[in-house]
Image (tube, helix red, strand yellow):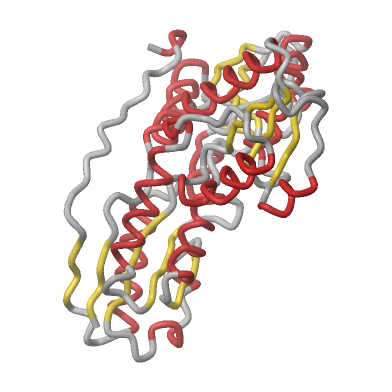
Length: 308
């Protein structure tokens, strides 16, 4: 049995930056440092930071007045920022710059009297933060069926933003449906989509050309990890998502000639290494481990000015 590793996989620049922000804040200010929501959607990362002194909360009211509060990579609404200001919290913003860009676009469209369609998944923390930028003007759609039911006050003044952890492939049909229903709609540029999500999906497409089983290392809460598993399944592979190596069922790889392994943008490489070890333990013939060619995404995000 061959094992084929995806490239790129794992941490993206936004996740790297967010984790580094928490670690620097702990070193500079000492524990505890409060973090609004899980900094990224990965249990391993969150547990490690919790051991170092990070306290994860959902509401700024849970942090003591004057404490350090870090906003997670997923971003927050203006209402959350206002709640933090009322408690005089020392806020450090770890929002992914790509999410911040979408927030700015939503605010600009609202200022220019546009209604805004958001393509995303209901309940996802990034979606909640973006919808909160202009709550009276936002309309959430998750699929083409939602587009068919959508009613807006003025179709000539309608714009679109997307959850960044979707891919161009994920949103293509929805955008076409929006264009068909509202011919004057203002669609987002492709670079509003997260580069890391698209790159990791492209790598899974390459994996499925050889692999009959694909294992995705990621968390159930991670949108981009779920999309990787779904994509592998749609392309004919037996697809499974695990948070840790111990979750791999030996029956998953029974009869497989090639197992592909990838990881979501918030999954650390140590978890991938543990998955490789587990696969080798389960399949005595799993001796040939190879990787797709190295892929330099060429993206680095600066730290917030207060931490540079």
